[in-house]
Image 1 (tube, rainbow, N blue to C red):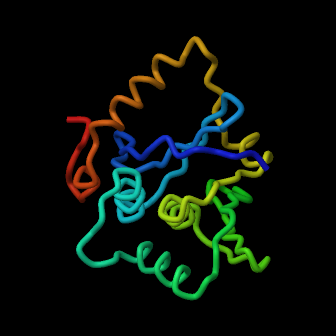
Image 2 (image 1 turned 180 degrees about the horizontal axis):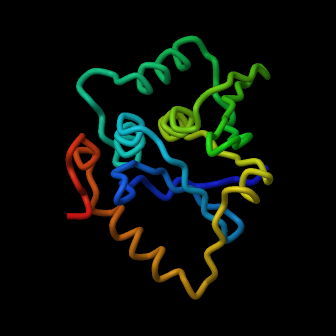
Image 3 (image 1 turned 45 degrees about the vertical axis):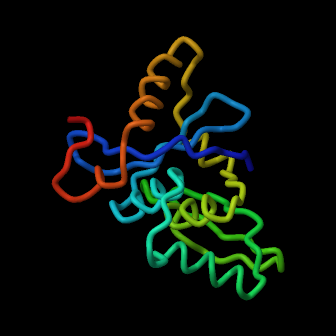
Length: 160
């Protein structure tokens, strides 16, 4: 397993499909995962520190974990089959629960839990970005600095 960071979310064109982009902490591979608009908004909210007036689903799940003392110790992206990614939530008790990566990432960001990715997933679906292409990554980071959760509402194009 390799630790990954969440670089951000964006809408892939021309399909208008949101993706979350992960990056190896110690490496040069990036992992794009296509996700739903609701999950993209949940991830963007968490990254931007947006606190809704009432808890959204991922906020509620975090509150339940806190209230019951069930600490989430790790999120693991475990597999990819036919373009579908799989993840597990790993709790301090040792219990593992299967979950979608998008939900797992949204929860990890709310709880400060590290995100791990199986080496085989990175080998199969990861994209190596050599140092000479880092300027393109920097442009993506600039985009992420200016995107808002509202950009993921149906029918909007955050790229302009």
